Image 1 (cartoon, helix red, strand yellow):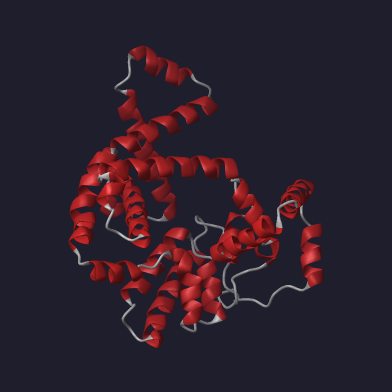
Image 2 (image 1 turned 30 degrees about the horizontal axis):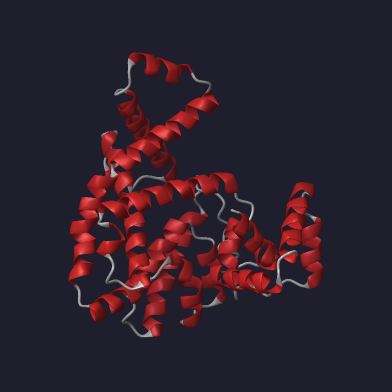
Length: 319
């Protein structure tokens, strides 16, 4: 996580002071200073430590870090500011382990030797993204809950179903252990039991990789392998990741209100917007923009009044 901390320092103006790129007027120097003064002592110390490490780097290293920060973008850096990096790192380690296991089951690097780097990255990304959906569905099925009904539930009930589905998966794995092992688990302190539950859930997810790999092979990978190289290049080139949306929409002429609303959508909501953009690639920019803006406003509006979701400020016009 250290490179990420240095990225945050390299674009401290972006992480602490800016909203959506191009959506608001940049803050003045006095506003930036005032916001630093309002930081807690601990936040000031961490910021100073990061800046000291940044200044200690060579000019080439600093420029490389600035370049990386510009590629990541102010929006994403702002979202990462203040995150629990230890927990985030642990989560990423788990995701990489799952991705690597899936890619090994799909045939490893040799299977994709004829793909370009962008095409290989697309396969890895889609495999990891698809596996998250696969696990969500399988967890619900393990608890005998309907994945179709889940999508129509309000957020509070979705959280309840998620807890029930995780409990069912953990209980299933515990049932395979000896009576003594089950007793030891139930005798653990709450914090230790949570850690053990996380390990059991990680084990459950890895058990699901063979079934998912077979499904991904049949419905995704084989189609890509059968495509002529030029057709595959065009197909992958049309793929839109949600991190690209701000730049793409700004290029299509989206207004500041739209970019501001996009900034407040969650990652899963941005993924849905990215899908609309991807499906509208062949339309004229004005028509594509209209379809994407409509989707952004729909998602933003549905969440702005949902108290259970929280953390989404209502747009000034809605207020």
